[in-house]
Each structure stands twice: as C-alpha cells, then as structure tokens.
Length: 394
Ligand SMILES: *[C@@H]1O[C@H](CO)[C@@H](O)[C@H](O)[C@H]1NC(C)=O
Ligand SMILES: *[C@@H]1O[C@H](CO)[C@@H](O)[C@H](O)[C@H]1NC(C)=O
Ligand SMILES: *[C@@H]1O[C@H](CO)[C@@H](O)[C@H](O)[C@H]1NC(C)=O
Image 1: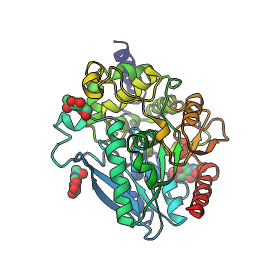
Image 2: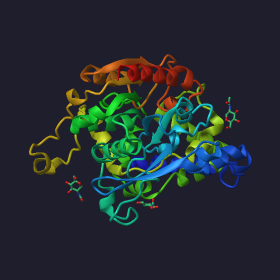
Image 3: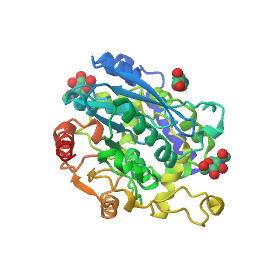
C-alpha cells in the first residue's frame, strides 16, 4: 500500500509538471538524443572506432552478446557492467572520457560483456525470454558461475591468450568474487582484477530507495517491468516528457547512487536513461536484499528448499579465501550502494588485495567510476599503471 502511494505520487507529480508540455527531444543536442538510442556497437562505430559483436553460449545454454573494440595482438581486457547496466556503460561518455576508448587507445584489446537477461543477452538456445519463466530463474550467482567463465574462455580462445585483465563495476565485482570462490580455477585466468565500487557485504547500504526495493519485489507489476521490458523506454519516456520530469528523475537517480553534481554532465542524463535500466531478473535484486538482511556474503536463500539444494538449512557462505587473484579495489565515500565500512570488511577477507584505493574526491558516487569528468585523471590512469606492473612481472 505504502509503495503504491509513493508510485502514485511520483507519477502524479510528473504529470502535473510535464504532461502536455514539450518533449525534451527538441531541447537537447541531437547527439545526446541519438546516443541514447544507438546500441553499443553502433555507438562505437559512430565515434570512428572499430566494433565487433560476438555471441557466447554458456554451459546452461544462455546466449550472451559481447561487444569488442578489437585490437589484434593487444592485451585482452574484459569490462563487466553492474546491475541493470550493459556493455554500453563503458563507452557511453564518448572517446574523450569513457574507459573502453581509453584502454583501446593505449593498445588493449577491449571486450565488454553482457550478463544474461540484459537487453543484449535476452537469448537462449531453447528458452524464449518473452514467454518462458524458466529463462528468468537466475541470480548473479548464475552470472558468476556460468556467464563470466564462458566469456573469459571465449576471449582467451579468440585471442590465443592464457590470461586477461578484468575490470568489474558493482555487480561486475560481485560476480568476480563469486566466480573465483565457486570456480577457483578461474583465478589463474586473470592477471589482475580491478573492482570498481566493490559489492559483497551490504549491511550498511545507504540508499533511501531501499525500502522501495524491499516492497517492490513483492509486486508482480514491478517484477515484470524489470524482466520483460528490454530496456528503459518506459522510464525514458516519463523522464523525457519535460524538464521538471527530468529533474525529478535525476533526483531519484542521485538517491540511488549518491549525489555528485560536479562530476556528472547533466546534459547527458537523458542519454544515460536510454541505456539504463537494461534489464535484469528479479532474483538478482532479491539475492542482494538477502545479503543486506543476513549481513553475509552467501548463496541464494531458498528458505525451505535450502535443505534439498545445499544439504543444510542456511545457504553456504562464499569462501573468499579462494579468491586468490590479485585485486585492486577502488571505492569511494559517497557511494550509496557500496559503503566504505562494508568494503573494508571485504578487503580484510580477500587474500590478495594489491591496491586499496579510496577516490580522493569525497563526493565521488557509484556511477562516477564510469561517467565522471575526472575519471581518467583520478582512476583510469591508475588502472593502466597497475596493469603495467603486472605485465612486467608475468
Ligand atoms: C540469439 O543468438 C544468435 C546467435 O547464436 C543470434 O544470431 C541472434 O541474433 C540472437 N538473437 C537475439 C534476439 O539476440
Ligand atoms: C530455479 O533454479 C533453482 C537453482 O538452480 C532450482 O533449484 C529451482 O528448482 C528452479 N526453479 C524453477 C521454478 O525452475
Ligand atoms: C556535456 O555534454 C554535452 C553533450 O554531449 C556537451 O556538449 C558538453 O560539452 C559537455 N560538457 C562538458 C563540460 O564537457
């Protein structure tokens, strides 16, 4: 009831301010509007970089789409997006800012993954995501155990390499920790992993939208909105209906990821909304909410079925001692989804942290790792310097 009220007020407010007024299509620069509509590979080509699309089939038959900015002979590097996000996140801010282009310009062979269920990876050899519920029966546990290993093996095979560098953001770090603990042989396939806004323990998560999430997962409409809409068109439609609507949406966004007006190009918010949210299974959200409640980093809680699935009443913890890959952790103070207290706890439990890097700007938020004006200066150069150290050693 409470949630429904909030939603009604939200939509009513938007309508009062914006219904019937001009759409933002006419106000924003055409490039911003267009970049919100293009797909990852189209965007890359628009900015005169080479782009490839690859399909990778997992051992449980999901078909994942990967994007690549190919540099034959370059160091393979895998960039893995966070919750609700997609490969686009690593190129969205364009050739002068985005990590994908930066790495390519430095000679890396850049691969960008898409987890099962997002707009690029709604595909399976037998299941249809539009009608088969079974398609959506996965959490980030399955992304970690099936998707990331399949993508790593594919890249290593294609590039004839033994190891690659991994960069994960948010959920892209969760799946790294889960993969390396559940399938420890993958520690050996990664030279160095960068965890941007690391997420494992979640007790201290700060977003004021949390209660909304907790109630939201009970509501079937919300569930189907997340799973069955291929991308953000609904939100984008609402948020683009006028400048006041956009302002409300921007504030909701800041409530989710932390507020940092200085590092974010506000003109590009509308472009971001063309790519976010990119689609997830509700079980991913449920699994995260379970971590917040249990204050543990552990497998999905099937409640009464735990006994059958795990042979114990409680879900097993992920064994972080097995995550032996060298990891550089990059975190920040104003990240509503990855609190420093929780990050420090994680760091203490990981056996091979080679860099523990607090972003020097206190307002740095969850998305600044990808979108900030100063991301190159304050983060990407450091990523490259750390990588170089490992190239020499290995
Ligand atoms: C599904 O994957 C196949 C490749 O195995 C590809 O040809 C097809 O376009 C994909 N479909 C969608 C909707 O992504
Ligand atoms: C979903 O997957 C879990 C774990 O793989 C399995 O135990 C369960 O039976 C599945 N549920 C459905 C409805 O397919
Ligand atoms: C913000 O983005 C717009 C649209 O891409 C661009 O024209 C503008 O120069 C950017 N502002 C800054 C300060 O980079």
